[in-house]
Image 1 (cartoon, rainbow, N blue to C red):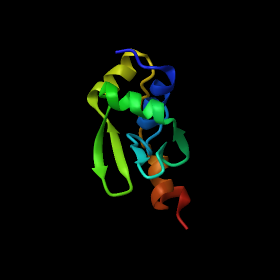
Image 2: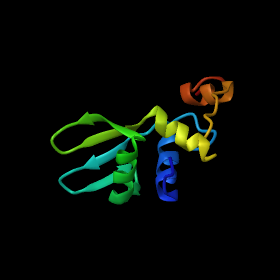
Image 3: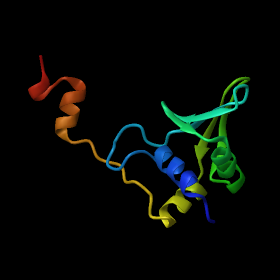
Length: 109
């Protein structure tokens, strides 16, 4: 499956940044009334790219309400991203990260 470079970049944004622990597997939010789409929170997606991802089967509907649809990446979308060499790896939480999150260790008050 050949996708445009823009579509691959959107899939990569949905997957999350390389080495990040949080903000992974993000949805595309689509507002039918405004005909706009974004990857949370501020990454705009062109409607033509959104349509390309829908038509190719790389994303599927996850949640639908009267004014919002959320679309998630499918296994096929992840496969296409890996084949293009654009898949990102998640990071890991170390003890320092956990101390910072919970205010323990050197970060305790």
